[in-house]
Length: 173
Image 1 (cartoon, rainbow, N blue to C red):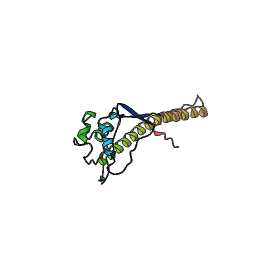
Image 2 (image 1 turned 180 degrees about the vertical axis):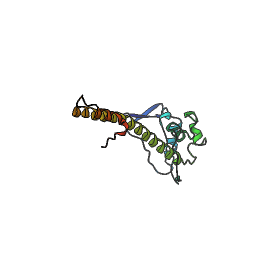
Image 3 (image 1 turned 90 degrees about the vertical axis):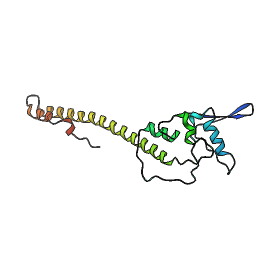
Image 4 (image 1 turned 180 degrees about the horizontal axis):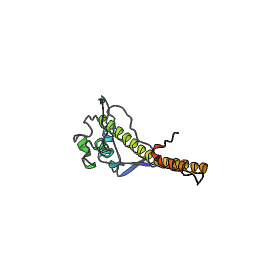
């Protein structure tokens, strides 16, 4: 498992928190959760590894969403624009990362649907590749069986079996 480390300044030294899970800060209103999250996301040494989730005080759920390339969807979610990079991260918060209200639920939905769509496409390609091998195995098996049953001297049944294209054979199970 990957260990995650967060380093905080403490006077003239630093203090580290190590974990294998995500870190969640809980506290009363006004206790500094947002300022701490902002500092971690914008100023800390780990800023390139952090994604702060905005406070969702009033969610606006999208009626629909359209998947896009996973790279663009991820950049849009993390940086606020699919053409931006880490250098533009503060733009996502309109230059006010501790106080700007951010509703990025639509971007999260696009990212999740894009990820699911990409995984489904990979799975479909793998299934097609595997089915080509299975169809070829079935064809070879049937041809050998026909050859064994009829014998080498009677080619009519074997030749008829070869006339059936392998993609017409269907494996179930």
